[in-house]
Length: 442
Ligand SMILES: C[S@@+](CC[C@H](N)C(=O)[O-])C[C@H]1O[C@@H](n2cnc3c(N)ncnc32)[C@H](O)[C@@H]1O
Image (cartoon, rainbow, N blue to C red; front, side, top):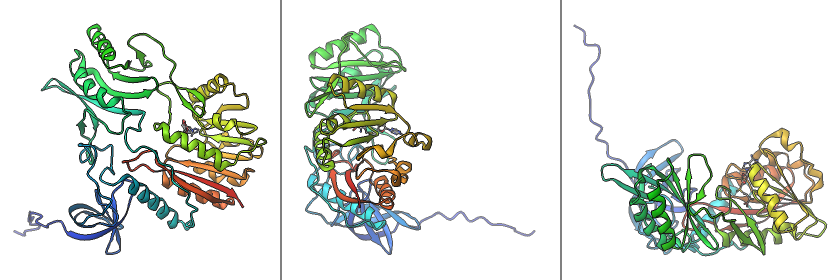
């Protein structure tokens, strides 16, 4: 008999390779970046300037993913994370780095991306900074019910996992939530219908601390009573949102939510996009006004204008602002905000700025200055048409540095060169990088 095939089930005893690397930057996830044998190598938790012994977890054609085993020389920028969940919670990536060093590392990261596309003489300006803790006016937590223990937890997604980590404190959340959150955790666990709680949102909206509970089924009467008592004891307002209906306050009292920016009152609804860091938002708007060097005769186009966060303050310094935005409700809010602040030189319209046909409807020749503040995808199609624009200045607010670099190339091709660039430290302790770049037509 011929033996055609003999399977030898050898156990893979190969040990993962240990390497020694010097970290020289961070990537978009806040992981340390090094070079090893011509490949880029990522080590989570490692800081620029440090030497690490690390275990190779993935060895791909162009990069190595390694897990830090031992920090051989630590950076002077390393610090003890202020939050006790920093190691496990996926919300923050850079708490082990001093806040000032985080900004320097983020700037080098942006610089590195631009240098890859040969747009590397960046005219850096002073980066905008504020408080590094308690800066978030909006925080969303997941809620999950553990049937065996009949326990409801609230928390965030863990690092490197889809699992969640229960917390009763978040140092990034606005100060009033410091005490409210731990009381809330106990309160939610005492609800009769606790298993239906899906998400918890915290909103700090002066003068109120608002908690929105997203539930799979409407709350029963006993739970409403418990939550009413909780809101009275903790000086906060509880809203409940069930299914697709809007969030409603359990005390039945309608409230007009607003934030103030440069003397203007900006109304919004809980479901609207608003900038989560008010302190940095104010600085960013002031810088936008200053960089655009607004003149009384200027006509400004504010693209991705949301509910008028930039348009309204800008309109106080120029002849006219046209705001364009994809969300109809945001446009309605912007119109309402212009009206209530008695600003008559703003106009808002709804358009999908990723649609060629809709871009064609814009009279590009009319505007002297353009501001764009897209979401993470950036504004590729829009910037590819920049050769049609008449504006002499374009201010790009970017929440994704890769999109900014890609779109900068389109603007560069159309003759717009970067004349100022700065980071806005909107999200300290996280890997998020917010950048503003001013382009001037040469
Ligand atoms: C980063 S937010 C900025 C909003 C506003 N500038 C502010 O500061 O509050 C991005 C905005 O772009 C809008 N948006 C996203 N995709 C869009 C699209 N394809 N067309 C038009 N607007 C879009 C979103 O609705 C959101 O309001």
